[in-house]
Structure formats: C-alpha cells, structure tokens
Length: 312
Image (cartoon, rainbow, N blue to C red; front, side):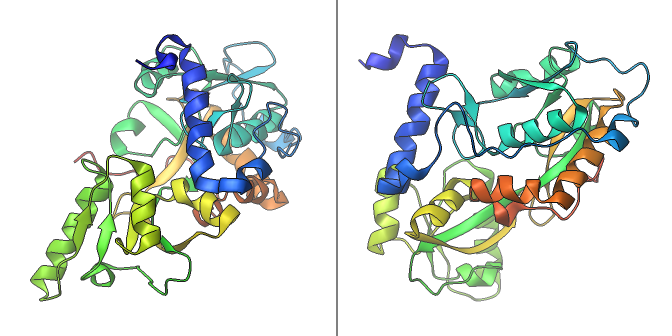
C-alpha cells in the first residue's frame, strides 16, 4: 500500500524522522539543522590524559578509527539527515566528542536495537552510544561511561501552571501515556498510591495517532503528556507550544543513567569517562545537549560503571 514499502530501511527511518519533526516544530522545523554536514556540531580535541589510560594491548575495530553503533530512529537522540543516510542527533554528537578525545576518526554504524549487544560483544564496533540505560544485568557483559540522565517528562501545553514532581501531583489529571510502556507502569503505580491515600484517581489516555494526542493536549482534553523526556524537550525549546511540568527518573523509584557501552574489560571505559568529563568541563557537552533541547538530562560528571537498575 505505501510507496515506502520497498525503500531501504534508512530511507524509511529518515522519512519518519522528518515527518515527525514537521508536526512537532511547524515553521520552526526549518531552523533545525538536518543537513548531513552538521556545521554546528561541537568538536573536541585529543585528551592526552585519557589516551594514557588506554591499556597497551587495547583493541580497536579499525586503525585510527573509533567505530560506534547507533540504533538510528527518531531525533533528537539519533535520526537521519536530509540525505537519508547520515546519522545526526545528540548521540552522534557525543560520539564525535569521544572520538575526538581519543584522537581517532569517527565511524557511525546504524544497527537495529536488538542487535547491538551481540555486535558489541563480538567486536563489530568499539562502543554503542544509543540511549542505553545502565542495568546490573548489562554490567555483567559491558562496561559503561555515563553521559545523560535517563529521564521521563511530563509536558503540558504552554501557559499551564501545572507542576508534576510526585504522585500526588497527578491526582485527578488526564494524562496521555503510551500503552505497554514503562511510563504507563509507573503512572499506574502512582495512581495506586494516590487512591490508597484517598486522592482523586487520574485518568490515563491512550492514542494510536500521535497527531491526535497532540491535539488533545493543546485543546485541553488532556492535562499532560508523559513519555521519554527527549521526545518533547526539543519541541519545547524550539516552539514554546509545550512546557516541561516535571521530570523523574526512568527507573523510578530508582535513578537511571544513560551511558556509552563498551566491551567488558576492554579498557576503553576509563578513558571514555575521562574524555566525557573533559567535555563537561570545557562546555562542549552542554552545547550538545542545548543544541538538541536535552539540557534537562545533563549530568554533572561522567561515571564508570555506576550502580545500574536491578535485574528485577
């Protein structure tokens, strides 16, 4: 039925990224750099202190190159440029800073999300920088260098005075959430707490059509939208049509971190952590997150293998 049925996967994903950006940003979409050149992408310099941390027998996939796997999907995390093949977004920008810090060329490889663990273990790439959350189960197979908070966000239409920072703040609200997501599970858990405390129950709203969900939010049929903070963060920064009402960890009630994943005991993680902390200190890191509307997810420092979400 669709003309895109037989197009290459990357072309379909690029079209999807652009199609989603249009309703998100309206006329402001033209101000977002979707070019493959990415002239505004922050660049780094080699970090000698980090390079010295690399083991003498460290193995890279390619000579003088840092090969990074990214599951290119939707901006601002990682999507495709207007040429339908160049991967752009916050994670590609972070990848650039790490590669520059290592003094190596950057090569980005688009992979399916389900394929990155085996590909990283088998040595197809040096690292995965693709919105990967640190978990205790993953730490058994990979090393991590954190670079962003794993945040969920409540967003309302512009002008709303709602602030949502705790379960009680959702009492009586109509909240848009995705069915079968961890956001839904958390929201329903919050509702149980509210009902147990004698507060008015919230109403979860489900929409198959994202455009309809946006209309519901803007028309007042819904009070708030709950989902990965990154999805609406860029819209809020670029258009002002929505506002952030509150964030909380994607691992609620525990905190969760997004991190660069490398092969277990490869020796890369300490060096990458050092590079990330250097980029945090010199301001390049903040420029990357600001460029993609993700400043709310900034960390004050990168950590190597911090506590991850428990196996259960």
